[in-house]
Image (cartoon, rainbow, N blue to C red; front, top):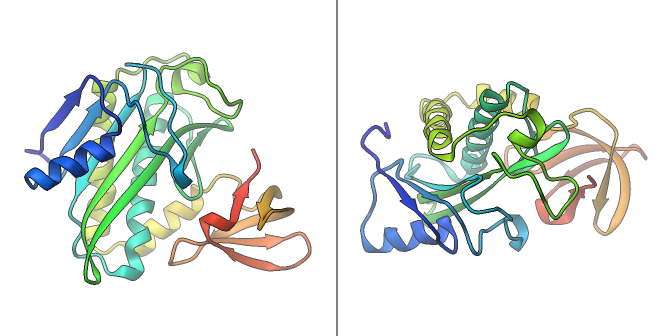
Length: 245
């Protein structure tokens, strides 16, 4: 799997996800094709945000997948696999344990070092294709937000983006293969165990109100499960809750 898929290296693009989507319209690419960019002028983040990155310092890429064998109720498991693969890669580069901040961010030493945006195309009730955009702060040292960091800033280790993308694709191959082979329980358990601040009292903004709650897990649809300070059990969509950094 992925052994013959190309890595398309761009000096600059608006968004690697956009580039991959436009490329797919011209010709269907081999599964595992990677779009790698030195700079994104309009990189996409979750909830319509942008992804900040300096030219040539970080890993900015998108991967094309065809998981047409995934049923709709297990579509979030693909996100879990990609998050686990990204966390495993960052752990390998940093020598530290990376965590997954639900739903699609990766945290190292309490700082956000990576984010993901998975865009699915459906054909009826089946996924036709997935374009997985992954941005990892490798070597950047300055950020506009205090909760951001990079592997280099936190550990002093330099990782070349060209080398990093090969490692990332290997870890994605591993977790994607487990998903294809039906190891759903293993994936679910690994994702839960990797959750940032699992079982730790934390501040959240829930429906525009600040609450204290503990993360207890994620349900089959990818919704966050919380036990609130007032005794309520909550199951939340990404748009209605956010952890306070």
